[in-house]
Amino acid sequence: MTINECSVATGADLDPAVALFRSLSDGTRLTIATRLAHGGESRVADLMAEMGLAQSTVSAHVACLRDCGLVIGRPEGRQVFYSLARPELMDLLAAAETLLAATGNAVALCPTYGTDVTVCGAGNNLPVCGGDVQVEARR
Image 1 (tube, rainbow, N blue to C red):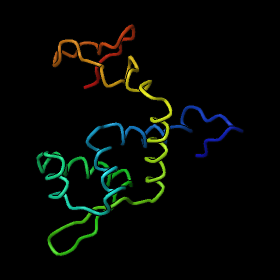
Image 2: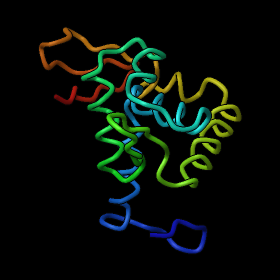
Image 3: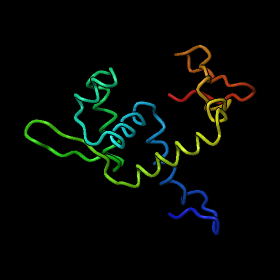
Image 4: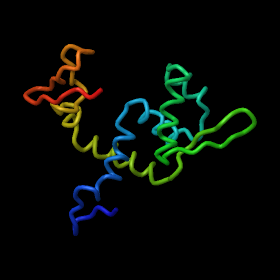
């Protein structure tokens, strides 16, 4: 799939891009990808220590990134060192940082996906509150 100004991708053509951005939409996975982009290869134990998360949580997120083809593992003895599978992911993360710097707080203040979005009645499968826009919480 190629996205450029000469053509408009729609529907199924965008499915791979949707999957890519969905794989990075979780804060933990984005933190892991960013850490690997800036700090090089790392073990799950290293990521656990830096992020303060349980081994099972970090392992599950690394596995998701690996299953999506974004992260690869290099076994060494009983350890596995993870790194980004493609250098293009570093470019994508850098472009995202540039876009966020250019838009200021607009993305963070987005009523649907911004950082201030709260869940009404958490755990009750009620709508997500965000200004005038409400979307159903996904479970």
